[in-house]
Length: 382
Image (cartoon, rainbow, N blue to C red; front, side, top):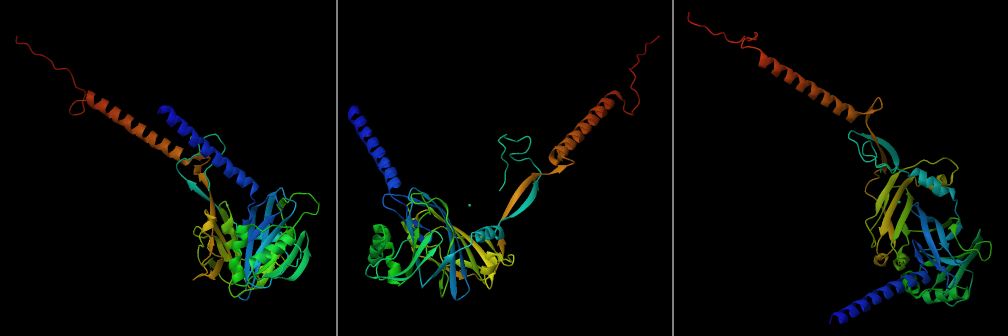
């Protein structure tokens, strides 16, 4: 019986190990193709991952512009990137300096605050590790059902603007241009087809043939008519790993997502009117839309994403800025204040105790009237 149980336990352990191995192998050979507001489709049997995506949405009440910058890695020397848009889009190259200016404008305020008692990193609690307490696609084809409404070359990108009456037609078009549309992505495009959205398809390829796609790509800027600002997120539900959203929104007023769309509660990391330097890339975007809102959100389970982010005006244009505090130990003339205070208290207690001891000693040697007590004398009858 014992041998039977041991054999059964070994079989279970082997099953678990094989399942884990299969999962890891599947994650290596299956490309992750959903990121933020678009989908990346690598070449066959190759992998392209988007390590980071930063986007800014500008909305002036009539027209929306999305500028995005991708940081990619992988072993594929070409890939397709598909972005659904509600209306016909104009596509141009963005200025990389725009994102540096946004980071600066929305940077947390650095402030200093002092503490009285020592904390980790202060003597004598210094752990010695040096850390201190302180405060995140493709060319033109002829597939039926697909209309090519424009094609252009932008730096390293080959950009096509498409209309599609069904996702199968879009898949056929991608296949004609050397890319395979994953079945799950084909189904995820159906809601956009039903709403008669269009697509921007971009061929990503380095200038040198055979060089893997890696590093920060040039930003792309998409502009289209919009009754309300929207940030497409539906395709991210296909991602197999947790997703993070970092979004800058420029509008006339403070903005917020209308719902969480299956993720954690969106958090505002900055909100306020900004005045960038004249003739800067950010100055162009803030003309008529001076209020910047920086939004962060986590999607621990991407499969729960149930729609696109619709942005709306908040009830009030309340300004907000994160603060990073540098904690410093309060000192007096370079000496920790707590040490001086403790030393003074100890000195005072020592003096008080010494005085008590002296007074007790004096009381023990003095008479009732404070005079020196003489030993009693004895009298003898003579």
